Amino acid sequence: DRLPDLFARLDRQCNRLIRLVTEVLEVSRLDLKRMTLARRPTNLGELVGRIVDEMRGVSSRHTLVIRRADAIVISVDPDRIEQVLTNLLANAIKYAPNGGPIEIVSRLEPDAAVVPVSDHGIGIPREKQARIFERFYRAHTGTAYEHSSSLCVGLYLSREFVLRHGGKMWFESEEGVGSTFSFSLPLSSGAS
Image (cartoon, rainbow, N blue to C red):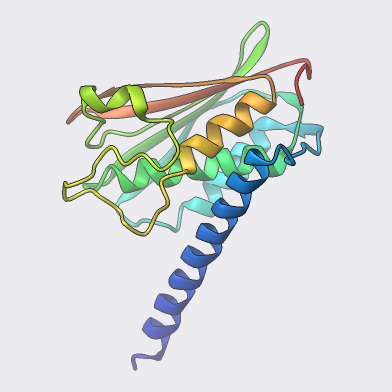
């Protein structure tokens, strides 16, 4: 019976459209400076655990592994940080096409919470790394890894959300070896 397969495909397409519309709205809000943060005390380790559990069914080839989850209660907008985590995990899955482990950490440092997400995928070509956080930039244009179903604003939005929290986002990547995208959030809420 083909019905379950058709429903699954329809569900994926609907989710893709919802994601694209949401990305357009978020970019518009940022451009108009209308994005606000709804901060509240949030257990970052629990948030990471929940998002990882939700993302585990996305790919049967990948194993999402939480390497460390410190107990960190921090004043953030949990919906925005959820978007950041979801985007980083989705990218790790997308750009590690052969599967394998994707490792997530949430660790407490003296003045910040730090969350790295690591994959063992295709990495980012060195000559394209400087522009990776630009809006609409496709680092893998013209390759087998180009994903035309994306607006290429996920990393741009993720970094903007982190910056609005007073945090930072950075990455390390080696072509053919993999990438680690990290973000930090200050323990005291300074920005908005």
